[in-house]
Image 1 (cartoon, rainbow, N blue to C red):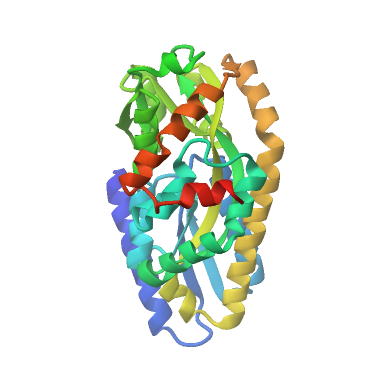
Image 2: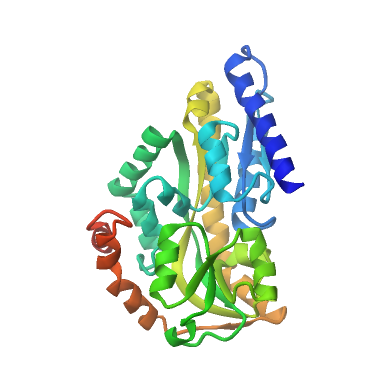
Length: 328
């Protein structure tokens, strides 16, 4: 039923795309905005904020139809639909674009960034500007806005108190090559599951551990399926909003400005709220029965750092990129 719904929505989105290029002036244009985050999660809230801002400001000339959850499919399926034009927009983490430009993989490598400010410094750098320009020119995807959000933490069925406890753990990772390489480097046995399937996978033992941005994971109730939450903070997550370049270019200039401004505002608000809510979410998890603990991250950090040369030799990202980031 879910797959059928996704196909029907994609077909409807395709008709909306066609209407944009065929419709006359004054006709309402529709943006189908796909998301894949848990309802109530960080990116779900961000995307709903963007939707509200555009629908309020466009005076009926442009309407955003946000399809929440995974109704259009997992992240990569939504991105592919956006590239094809059947979906016009998508909002989540930047890491997914490593599937098209390998340098985005650095966002998914453990401890590549010192802190939230360091991630933002990279996003504001000429290196990142060149990355998103290549994405626009080669893949037809325009990044309207991006920023940092929250740390990614570990959820497990058993306590993880040291690097040794990760050995041979069946670990869920996203369909991003760097994540797979990272968790293999740390000793786990990675497995791929769609985000929506992770809580059930943890409950049934299909996987023994998973990781994710703390707010999104809380919204998905991972802490109920795997009650041991470890503050590895191994990756500092990002948020972004993107749009199909052909669709964006066809919008009237004033509508382009409304869309771009709303994206920047929604992402900025996400950064503010995300930073403020981490401690609150940890407290909620504890009240709801989870055991939240710190861990000495130095051994994990050291293992990830030792593997950088190997990752660059294998071409996971451009040679020297990791060091350029350290120098920022």
